[in-house]
Length: 162
Image 1: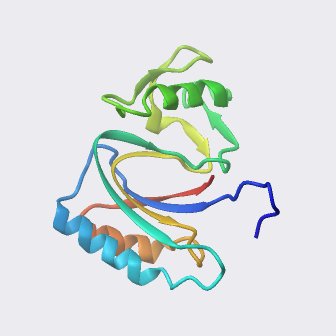
Image 2 (image 1 turned 120 degrees about the vertical axis):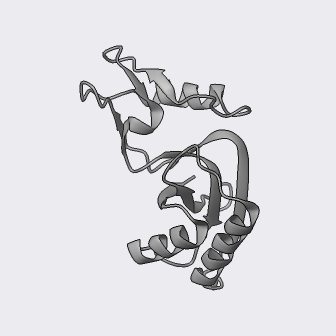
């Protein structure tokens, strides 16, 4: 419960394909969403649990929000500023990413956004199942494996606090 005048925060568990460019067909996506719905209990904690299923035309960022504590360069290991990352996400917010290729500001190395070392996972995807304010712990490896099997592709989970 929040105090008057304070913004309410949300917890989001997103399940995305392991390959950021892969996208399931509608039937497989719907079956995976139905499985996620069975795995999430009806809410009794005072929050409204919602499940959103999205197919994106281009690769879209699936960020962990306030959970992101550090981004590291895969080439030199230096920290990458949140401002640089945030500006990049903002620039692609409307149209998504045609490519994930970037040049990192720390050492100038060419790499990919999905290769950056995120302390608390972030991801990129053309398909997402997002569970808003679930009344449960994050999905375990067995559940993620089952979702991936139904979807037809391995999946990963992004835990966001926004």
